[in-house]
Image 1 (cartoon, rainbow, N blue to C red):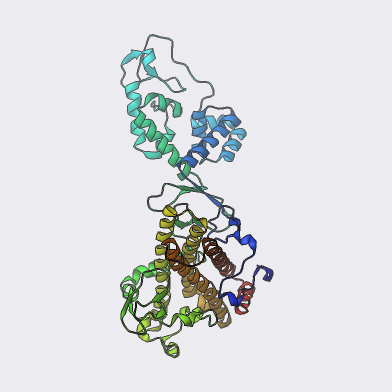
Image 2: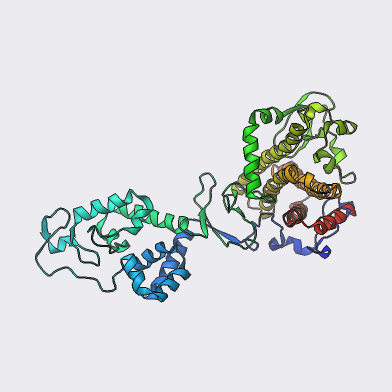
Length: 499
């Protein structure tokens, strides 16, 4: 990342970068998880997309190899739905592939007699009531149906169905299943085929989001492992847990094991009601922005995390680093934060409590923002509003994991690097809070008809500027952490300090 890519921010704009006119182009938005289609290394597939891609692959094999549709499905299932591998293997050794998969080149016809004996129930039936795979072994319709339904119990194993004759290994394909089974069984076979297309493929997986039926096609080795499905659920392609940039899967696993071990203590730390620092009345947090305003008549605005006045976090002071940087309790008294707010007396527990609290707070903010995003998608069509809430959700996801990064790695770098990291994260967090507050308060007033006085165009322009800047700051932060490049972090810190 070169210094030329870091754009200085005008302090007079109070944290809102005046982007160029191109920022109004949807393609210019800086989504943190690469949710914009132009930045993705993956594609979200709905049911229709899955069907279409599967049929395209089947048709490609059918046309390229001049084989039947049923044979193409069997070949693709065997090679995990890899079109290139299926073709390569077929051209390299068609004879052995046919033998191993039970695909006869020339089918054996049924004998030209009036009656044939079923090789399962040993009863005789008219020839037109008997069916046989390519090997020519005849079976009655009743025995065929029972055989096919039995294989359905093995799940995806039904896609590798063979002749009922145990001494034969000829494949039974989609054509025979459709001809011999009920509409219900045909539907079941179609579902198994759909599952195989996703679950047996190395480049496709189901979205793990609750109630989501989408799948994701991923270009492995092309960048981040984070995926954002169209259902708004984000996850890691590698471990299939939640998206966790900028930390690795092993760190996430260690973090959740620690949370589980300390769950009782952490439940006491993470409270949703605190006394107002000014009037001492209890104030409940709505899990949105961490900027809290005490109800009338007090109306004191303070930070939920550190309980300082919100004005202390202003752009000129730029003190998110003081708010969110861990400092032992004996060092914090000068900033006005008591040991009670930290929760624990022992340094190791106190340090963990510090990072856990901020991790959990941002997770709550993310869930609230996700609910707002889904509500906006259902009610409003204004793209800038949807984009803003999507950016908030993604940045909250990243921000919470930077605290896990801080917990495990902050003490492994120099004090100077720690300070630079806190500055860069503080800058990104400040802009996220500004965007979050604006989306929650100003947009809500406008959409409910209570203001603000500015028109929709001005509101949209400001929202786009905030969204673009926030995404850019978080992308820079992620890049610096993941690549562990001191020059990149220093460059961003210099840019922030001069703004």
